[in-house]
Length: 202
Ligand SMILES: Cc1cc2nc3c(=O)[nH]c(=O)nc-3n(C[C@H](O)[C@H](O)[C@H](O)COP(=O)(O)O)c2cc1C
Image (cartoon, rainbow, N blue to C red):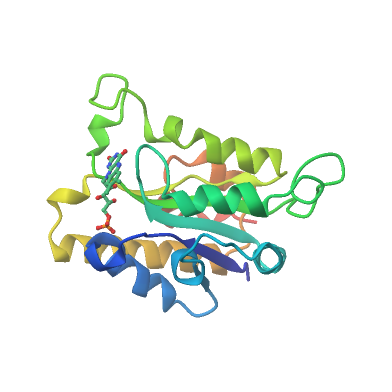
């Protein structure tokens, strides 16, 4: 069974509609380690040793957050800057994370069609997530297809509950199946693992 670590970041959870629902659902999945970064580090004073230890003891590391300014809330950048140390996570001797999986679970204000060359944001969500993909690659990790909830402003409570259910199922499949890791990076979106035929899994 693959071990899953969720590094969660929402700087204003009291105002959240989407993650206020997704967060407790993910947190309650047995075996998932839920790491709330803003709760643990309200002053962004990240405990690097603790975070590195958490990384070493998990196979799949997912950042869960709202999409802010085409990226992530600030604490995720701070976490990356501090935790992924040269000589540990990358560089000639930095092999601590080799073979692990990194990915994003994001909620996005704009609808999916606005994230296209012809759309309002002119680039795909995958293009905006490139710094995460390449960070994973530099750390000898595989970058999984992202789990994206687009167009969140139009959603009612019940719509979000459906995404919450889909996310829960996706994470349970990630835990349960010994995936061919490269198959995760070949998908467009992570929830598509729910449709993968058995033979593409190891
Ligand atoms: C500071 C800030 C920046 C945002 N930047 C973007 C953005 O770049 N693209 C986008 O589609 N939505 C953007 N949004 C909308 C959020 O992604 C959306 O409100 C969030 O995913 C909703 O999740 P929540 O209900 O858990 O807060 C932004 C919202 C805030 C507050």
